[in-house]
Image (tube, rainbow, N blue to C red; front, side, top):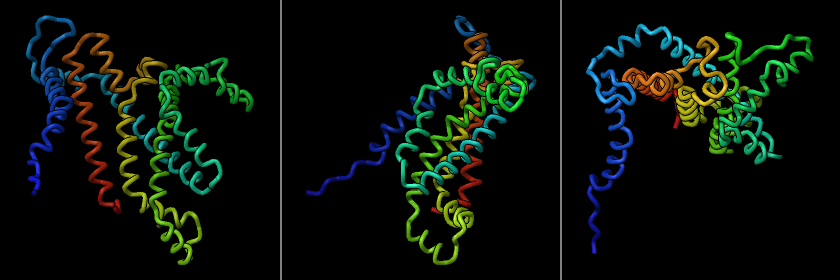
Amino acid sequence: MRIKPLPLALLLGPSLVLTALLLIVPLAIVALMSMTDWQFGAATWNWVGLENYIQLWNDDSFRKSFSNTVFYLIVVSLGSIGLGLGLALLIESHDSWRSFYRTAFFMPVASTLIAMAIVWQFLMHPTAGFFNYVLSMFGGEPRNWLRDYDLALPSLAVIGIWQMSGLALVMFLAGLKSIPSELRDACLLDGMRHPVDRLFRLILPMLGPTMLFVVTVCAIRSLQVFDTVHALTQGGPNKATEVLLHTIYSEGFGFFRMGYASAMVVVFVACIFILTLIQQIGMEKRTHY
C-alpha cells in the first residue's frame, strides 16, 4: 500500500502559525503602537504618525545610548571572538584537562548574569575591590571603575567579553573538531609547519561557517545588553553607560511613554536585521562550506 505524502502546507502550517503568533503579530502591534502617544495605563490614545520617530532623531539621549551600544557591540564582539578563538586553539592543542577547561570557561554563559554582576561589582569596588588592589601593588591610583565617566562603559565591556567568550569558545571547539585530521597531516607534509601559517591557511578558512555563526550570535547578544547596565550603573554616570535596551525600559516602564518606547523597539529590531543582513552578505562570500 502506497502512503500518500502529506501536503507541504500541512507540514509548514504549525511552524508558520507559531512564527506569526510569536514574532510577526507582536512586531506589527509594536509598530502600530509606535505611531501613537499611548502612555502605560491610559484609557485613551491619539494617532501621531511619525512624530515619535522625528523626536527620536532629535533626541540627544537616544543618540547617546545608540553610540554607546555601537561601542559596546564592537568591543565585546571582537573581544569575545578573539578570546574565544585563542582559548579554543590552546585547549585543542593540549589533551590534558580539556573537559575541565571547556566546562570552566562555559560557566559564565550558564550562570545568572545578575548574580555575576554583583561579584563584578565587588571586584571593581573603589576602595576594597580586587582591581584597585592590583593597581596599588604596582603603584597605581585607585579608580572608581563603574562611576568614572571614561571607564564605566569599557568596564561593562570587559564583563561582556568575560561572559560571551565561553560561548564562542565552545562553538570554536566544535568547529575545530570538524576539521579532518588528513588536512592537518597534508599541511605538515607540504612544509606548513609554523602555527601561524596553519592558522591562516587551514584553520580559519575551515572555520568559516562556525565563524559566521559566532559573529552573528555575539553581535546580536551584544546589542541585547541590559542586565549588567541595570544592575551595576543604571545607565550612569551621566548616561555614560546608557544603552538601547535600558533606554527602552526606562521610557516604557519608568516614564510610561509606551508609544515612544515602541518607536525605539522598531529602530532596535531594524538595527538587528540590518546588522545580520550585512554579516550574512559580507561573510557569506568568504565562507567555505
